[in-house]
Length: 123
Image 1 (cartoon, rainbow, N blue to C red):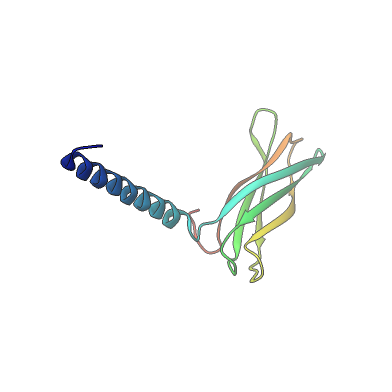
Image 2: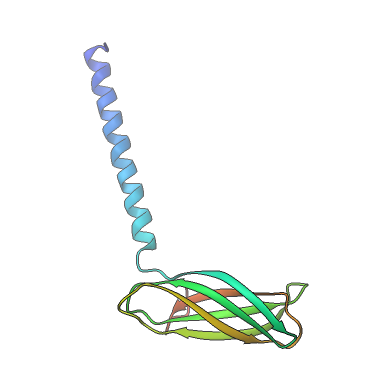
């Protein structure tokens, strides 16, 4: 099919691509392992002074997480902030929580601004 020298280079090229792909996958897994992730599930504007936010937190089991929640008005200005501590759990690494935010004016949305391992300053 191919002359002997071309076949050798094809084999070397395929093995090199497989090795590079394995290294890229390893770097991707290493960069995300043990990190805290979050997602706003829903929000409910209760009245002019409060919003309730439902959110999901993914973290290593046994990790306490502190989340900052934010309520915003129609111009995307912050009208309310709240910090919520999600306690550690050995059973599960994913937790769905619900928390209220008191606001200074009517909010139109509520979101999770960020979540960090408790005691740290960076996500």
